[in-house]
Length: 154
Image (tube, rainbow, N blue to C red; front, side):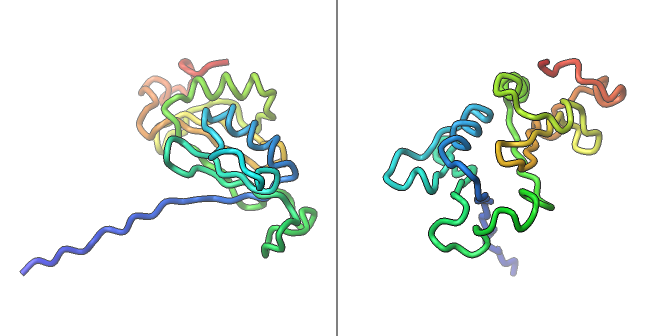
């Protein structure tokens, strides 16, 4: 007799420590086209960034509220060994927004051959590396062959 195993639902809810929650909220909101969960008396210490009803990213002020591992910002480079990776169907628009924000570009828009999508690598206000990509399989065959970025906004 077949048995059905319930499929677990897991969603990443990354939290990063930042030097200025309000500035980071504005930066990520403008870059990704998302919104803060809402103003609160706690917004200067912690903010939740939402895409509709889905939590995308949490921002927490360094050295506040005695949370383990959210202290001593100088202990290691920001996000050492971590990439904040976001997929969007609005890749060209995100590239335009990144340019408007004067975001530091680590890698210009390009096609990643393995997942066949486009990516741009940036640094945020605190130096975390942020990768924004289009959906897997979205890049056209000629872009993959030539590793081109013909559809990417400049």
